[in-house]
Image (cartoon, rainbow, N blue to C red; front, side, top):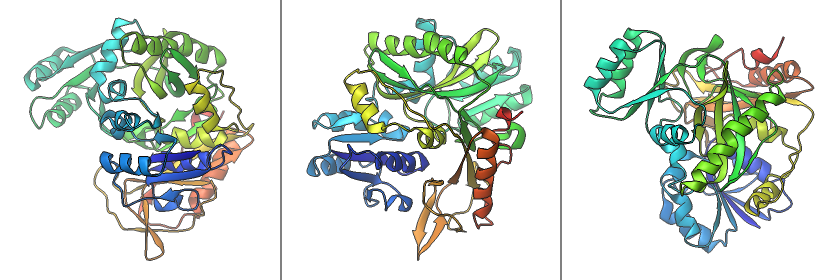
Length: 412
């Protein structure tokens, strides 16, 4: 069958890498893709990710059987709906279901209606009301922009001064909807769940992401500075509880309320004293969690997607080894950073997944904030980490930085 991957980042790189291994896929396309994908897919960089009309036209002209949408923006903008209107199957929710990620308010309200465990919250759409609220709320407090923010629309304010700075930033363009959440203490993890309406199948391997820019979880939130799987110190009981109290109920709630979801639902969860609670939902694979999870997956991703469509049982197979991914980002990210910096020393053999590089005169140069993920493999987390950092040290560039503590929580 002919498969089209939408997106250009590291998540889409690993999706094309994994789908290229499937005997079910006869021809693989990527729009816009990136230069690191050219050996595993037919890349069409001339078509923009937000050019829905041209994407649909391409898919129809090339008789695409399945489109796999990687990033959140095309989902929340309704690309799924437009492709489906032309009879093309899409792995990725339609516009109304993608609200689960596109609107923090939508997600919090549906969780509240269906008693799905999450932090207490207030929605405030006015700067003056926000200023009043932060004078009397408990700290720390979590502020979240309602819409998409590429993983950077969350600020944890430890005190009034930090909350004041966050309010000034979030409301700088006038009235905006901001969700203020009670801060939850505990350890976070990421659970990917295949969902088709009221049918939900959580992965039986979880990952752990590292959101903060610097070691020891310091610095601003980013799109993710590294991830690893499995997470050996989080037991099967937590996964079972998360499935029973979050994964199954949210799929059922969406279905019953007319927001039937088809695709992968990312559950960002935290283990509290009361059990697992939701921090966030995403309407697609996490990045960089996808890179380590799909590297570890030994079964056929395309077969899983077909089985999900048919609501058949899904049997995951995983390699015995552990995987650790370390993100190299442009210095200055998630703030301002330079582009066009040369990066060398890596080979595209499944150990590196590219987020922000482009070919220029036979050299790869930086084109984004998060640039490249080095993925190490080993018989345990410690050995996978060692290999990951060996791969990091192979990269030649003065323009990148990375964290040194990815996966440390899993190493005793």
